[in-house]
Image (cartoon, rainbow, N blue to C red):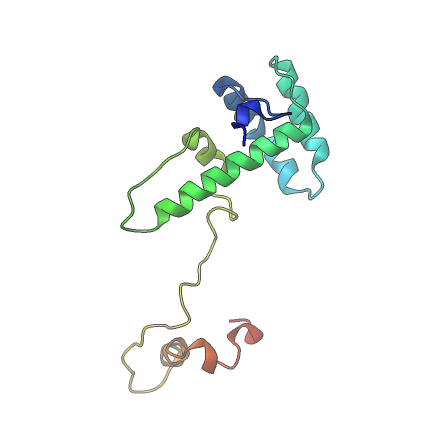
Length: 152
């Protein structure tokens, strides 16, 4: 197999070019358009046009693929670093990508469900809402009768 730089159709991205791409893609108006659209070719065509204004010739598809690759690498690093006991790693353009992606639900979920088991709390004398909640939290997923069916 040939190295990536020798593959047909493969064009190497320079560091300054990637930095400009990230800056264009990270613009709040571009981000808003991307978040509000499933079909986003027009947005990537806009990014490609702005890249041309900076002196780079990249198609909308090349821009889309590069951004997808950058997102994937960033998420891989972010997921690796979340786990305790591991040596922290980074990737090229991590800080720039973190500025754009750091608070996105696709990278940093709003809520996580670690397990189906809760910690039991000591029983109160009269069962109030806290006792009922503790009782529910101490059940396993299999004996809850379908927590998700009840909106919990």
